[in-house]
Length: 119
Image (cartoon, rainbow, N blue to C red; front, side, top):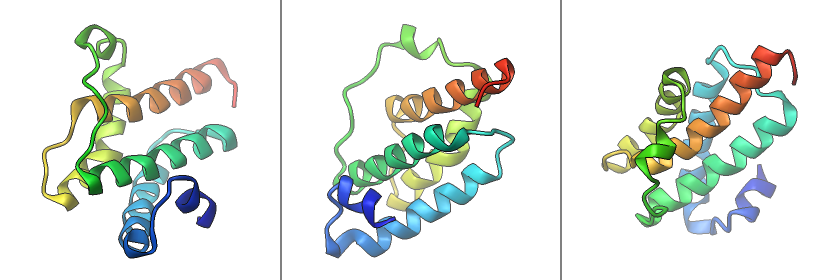
């Protein structure tokens, strides 16, 4: 946990809240019918902490083209929303579609790996 906090430069003032948000997101992730595998789970975990930091700073990625967003399956979108939407809700802001898309790419890769029998 400390590595993820340090990698994402979460300062002492925000560590407790960031950790609580992260652990809640990880719990939502565990409830999904998705096997991420160790490496994919670590990448998603790091991404979630980076997202938590961006939400706390109200600084988001640039908008992603709708054409790219259409590449995600409905299932990946649904899973990404289940994990990430509450992070925005905790901050009292609307979910950012581009940020949700990035979480969804992790879901899509895990779903594809599961379908191919690879982890």
